[in-house]
Length: 290
Image 1: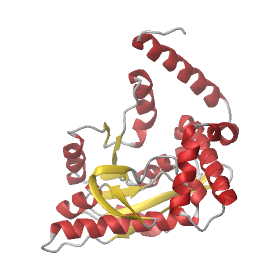
Image 2: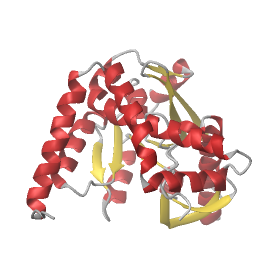
Image 3: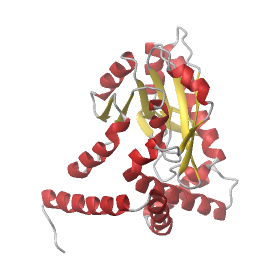
Image 4: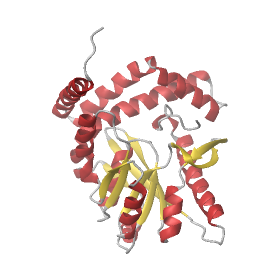
């Protein structure tokens, strides 16, 4: 078995990534999305993560049949494959009319108000496009991301996404919370995915089972007096998307911990309702419950 030094492995992986990028960019976005979605739908079920997705579907949707859960899992893989290919066409998608915003007049008026926002979302549809809806109304967005282990690929992916986050796209580290709070203080919208397992958070019910959940959105909104929203970008046919958001009440009583827990639970309930409505568009393959 041939082994390569880590630096060479990184370079080979990066070369493969750039070749795939060139191929997908050369294709029309509809073709790239369809081909990638079909490939992921066929090949991803061969991985160990498919078994994890099915196990979590059994936990969350016990009334569904095995065939229904298998169908949902394959729809999930297709959505993820499409999202991957679409990431190479983000400028084109954002500049087009492919994104429709629910209650556009209302959100346009809200976005014109002063002050920062905290906006939560989940790995639903093409979640990357959510911030484009905020930018449409002049809202600067700041975000956080998990670094990719290959630094060359990480830098390239970050560069591809950075234009969506004029307030800054920060790697997840010990100092990121301070940076994000500062951006909200400056009037930016913090965009954060709130459906990932967070062992430093609190356990709240998610599909009936306690799940370790981030409290950072609720803590930040309560601390700064900023509004807290939760949104989703639902995939539509022909690489089109529908963005909707709702505001989550943030209690501000003398019991800080209870307030944070209540707002965090409300965020998760809204996400759960949306996922139940379109389960094939959520990323069941990550470890949500531990």
